[in-house]
Amino acid sequence: MEADPAIASTLALIRQAVASGVQLDLVYLNASGEKERRHVDPLRVESFDDDWYLRGWCHLREAVRTFRLDRISDAVITDLPIEHRASEVRLPDRLFEPSPQDLEVTIDIASSAMPLIADFIPDGATSTEHDGRIRTTLRVSHYHGLKRLATRMSGVMTVVAPPSAREAVADWARSGVDRYRKEMR
Image (tube, rainbow, N blue to C red; front, top):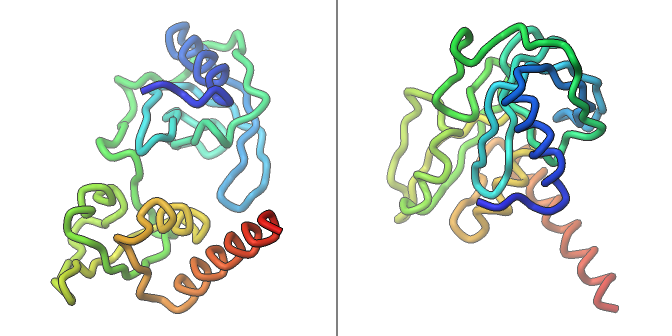
């Protein structure tokens, strides 16, 4: 898969750091929309659903974290050797690991699309057939991620509950329609 030109230089820099076994210093736009300076031992670069991700040991959080490349800025390779190697830390098989802080959201989705959201469904979640669609529970770290997912799954996924999740997705969609209408004038 070819990287978006806007992140190609970040991708090349990260690949160089992984190959060299040195830390990265970067600014990351977190889920709350705040920029944080991070020092990261880069362990793996992966692509999922047309987005590129860095998985690495975050020295700020003292744990393995997943960073979307389009949220990384001001990345530089340091001369500090990495302190954690991929062979020494647990890198989950799934790109997205649930956490206790995640929000649970009930959705209806076309059965053919279920494999596309498998990483968001917590282990042990029940799924039931409902009006020719599958009703299941997702776990997301924040509603911004849910809005992005709903956009990608437009026409095949509907947010059912909680009401705050439905409202967040609906407000975001209305905002997009409003922007489109203004641009068309």
